[in-house]
Length: 139
Image (cartoon, rainbow, N blue to C red):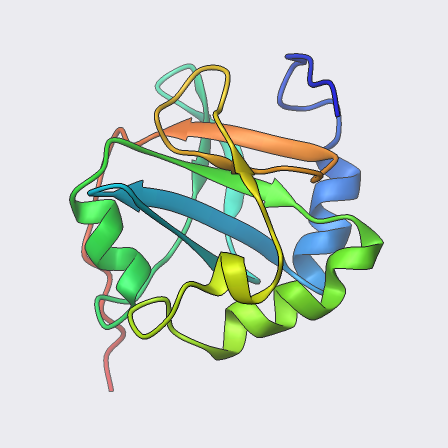
């Protein structure tokens, strides 16, 4: 699949539709190990005059550990045929297994960031980590 860089707003409608169901795949890596996590929440917009994608990852998640060691991540919009992989990546931890291998997903280098992307996803947002904030819901 050939990828081209387009404005982040080009596929927002499609991205938000898939975000709602079945979800998007957040991918990052550290120490040579990549991991994908299903996300069903996030926001896209402008902050400090730059396009920003904010994602929320609980500290208990393996992806959180990888993000703490990384400077980037990708948010991959899966094709309709990837629904089972999206569900799998949302049910199991990458701490215990290689979810990408279990789902027969291959990764490819990103064009602009160090984090890899899932090959075959029609839309990929390449994101640099510009801010981290602890958000702990009051119980």
